[in-house]
Image 1: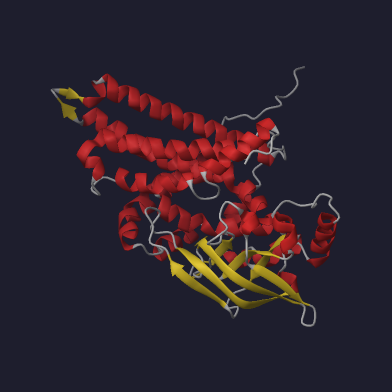
Image 2: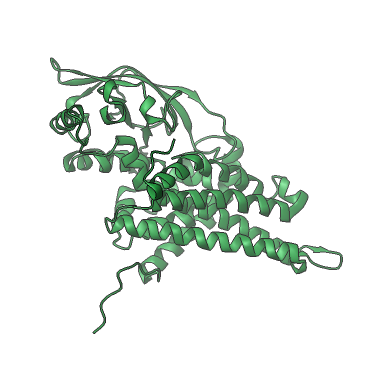
Length: 409
């Protein structure tokens, strides 16, 4: 009798295939036809989100079900198809999940049960959530965070002050998950995450950013001016925080991952899958174009330079998918990323999206540079995948430290 394989199987189950086809149909029929309009308007596409909610795509149940898929492949499969439709609208549909992941990563079961359902709402009464970590002077360097959280024992409230930036859904959201410094001397080990409930006084939207790509997605500053939240809004609870801080002050292990990093580690393979969706969409357009576009009396795909470029594009996409699926499977099995496999997947997929979309524009020539063809938008959208949730340089730093054990800076 042979023992079961110890590694992952990448044969999609009937459930995965049904999921893939379902999300792909929505992306093809609803997302793609609306993509150019909302990119030009640079506004949040509420009507598209409403349609996603109606079919059960924008719901807590959907994301929770796929997140607990024992193979780990549910989320990557869904993300790839959705972002094949459009990255800007895709981020509007999944942006809330980053905040939800923050609650799951740091919160108690009671907090997850209380707050996660409120982040999505329901058709006709949609809700949004935002995860607020980056700051004007603290992006990749989370240790430089300045937003402060002070505990008011008299009222059992936390008082938050500071400015967050690059927040997806920031200011537009009903619920904000905010990372703040409780003990500045401990740097990253002195941070914690807080729920800011709807309509809390003192929270306001700052600058809304006009972006190069993913224009439909709302990205803005979040200003916190003496924002008071109940003690129960500290994710994980005060007792757990006090124990962790005490261990950190004694020079021991903090006992828990940094609040922001814990969230990003859970989401990196999913972000990689988004990048794959963009790359695949551009590749398919370029392939179809190369088969039908004639120059010098023959389809341009018969030119070796074009054919080899498409071959490299296809190979990079397949390799990216395998890295993402492996990382997602490892996370689902509770395996540690000893070689920073999560960072590897995000790094390679993000770089692939940029390279593939640029090559697709090149294959389309002048047409690719116009807004008449969507590869121009896809190339703009792809660039963010080498920047947000850890730049390519930060991913390489994480990988280098993991494989060398050296304190590389």
